[in-house]
Image (tube, rainbow, N blue to C red):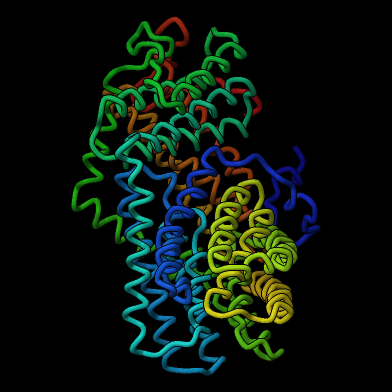
Length: 578
């Protein structure tokens, strides 16, 4: 083997893509949930204000209504707490912006506060892994409020409107639990079954990683779902079945993949949860009852106060010195400040759109940030044209303005899962129409300012991402390698122990492999850092997948486990191209 095949690669800028980031993908299987939720959460306060003749207050109720975009992948028990936290975070950011706006009219101060809020919101969302839409909505609301006329005495009432609208959003997002309590869990398990089917049909590193990530997400969803119910017990059995299904068997791959996809479709539907082959030595994969229900110990551990305190400490440490999240937060701070200052210098009176544009670009690494820069710029420029076309219609009556905003809110969430730029085509006119609630603005001024803000915000934002290095990304890969090696050792040692203990060790190994892949992908897209241990990452993934395969096999008609001796495990053969 030549030296070139194992030499570590130094990430560096090269041939940034222009077309690939703009290609449309398949829509999310739950795209309609945030779309319908945000419409319902927005319609109640907006129509109420329309009746009262106070549409000028929509900006404050919209802050609470937009919280309905969060948490749709979480089980309802976890979603309730998460959404409450989002509403409080939204109110806190809005409060800081309104107080600042009421105390000063200095553009430099307002831009500085907006950039600082954007950086804090970015770091907080990354640390908590809140998921889409992340910090962008929080930054949009707080940045817009900074440049809205405000008096100190108005702040409490405006924040009360946000909290009231946030309560409506909370009810909209949590209310479906009364109809279909295990809906999020069923969708997560269906994704795991579908990913397992893809793995069976097309064995290889890519499908194995996707299956491991989907199974891990399904287990995490079940762990966070609250007390066990008969439906959740059945879903646990299905996840264990999906996890075991990727091991070699005597069943034809095509037939097995079709059967798993059929289970996924039934699980996603509204009928009874399907039943996989029975557990025990005679089952298709020899899944044991104790292994299925070993999740109870983990669920109990999550409720332990000591475990919760440890989780809070880990969250604080994730933002401490040495954290790979801090450089991204610094990029956000510098990029937003630079974008706001450039627009202010060019005469834009309210450069908050430039701040929001810059803040929306920052992803896990520079390469993904470049992709988002292209998507955001194209989407915003096309969205301005859409705004120019619908503006006359929106000005025919106050109700028409409300309905236009609701339509674009739905369209944004319906389209954004296909590609971010397509969703931005709908987000841009919605954001511009919000300004019409206060008072009509000259169309030419609005369009010109938004085009200028978009271009300058994108340029300044990406410039900051390229210049602020994130050498800590490689350190995250090294820590993930150590954690994976430790988890693999524990999984091998647990191979001969109680099935519940063995299952917990396997889930820990799966989680470490998911973290390792995420860390490696993030570091691979960064510039200006030390060499990446790519060969070590590949070897660790292969070894981890072999261990998962070996420890999943049980004596039975489909497969037999490898022999296990004290302190040693005979590895199973590699699967596919791994």
